[in-house]
Length: 277
Image 1 (cartoon, rainbow, N blue to C red):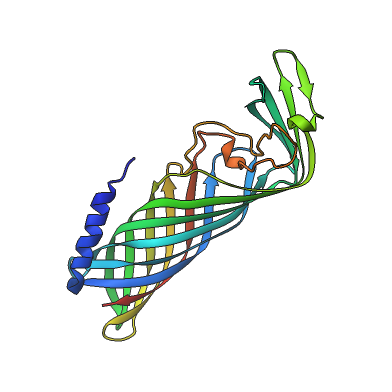
Image 2: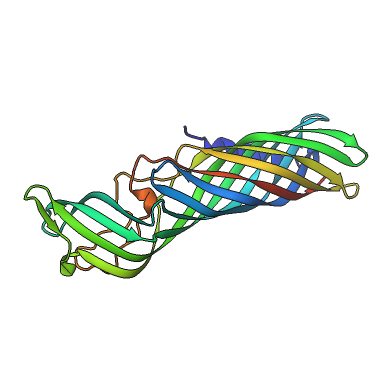
């Protein structure tokens, strides 16, 4: 599903141009930020997310308004294999262009992921007064989620890479000068290739008048992506193959082992904001 960015920008520009009838807001949100995957044999832990945001809400009438803005978000989590010691395989090609099965075994592999993204929200707000100076608010809409950088830092107690050549029924597991063998205390960095997706967004909260033109906004939020943020055209080993040594193996990441995997952001937590009428 493709999103027309020009239409979104035009909508935001229109709302800003209607500043007299609009309410400007700034805020932060914090909570659980999970980059979900459907890759079997992996598990996530230490999931944190947050964002800073600003935008406008244009009032249609007493209860309803249309909002748009810009947000910068961050997701941080750790991903590991379900088993402390595991072997994953994929196909590679050596320096002589011969194809082989690359078997990578790691112990205590941990991948620290950091995702930065821009988000463009477009939503409908419903509000109603429930007490003097207190309004109930509900927001529902969509966001265009555009990853800026998706970095990974991978470590393992050891990495062992071996090759199996099916044409000649040959296994090579100790030939370091051709990239086959063990390496202790593995550590490497990498980055996933990404693309933009749509997200649904919901907020439920309250505003508290702090003066004639200012109010404090507090809410719970829930966001969920649709589709995958990864943009890759082939399966790769999570620890890359170096055809000249067992060291300096690139960290491709666990999400690289399946080019058709669905990797999407899901977040929930608390939003705090300040509204300017």
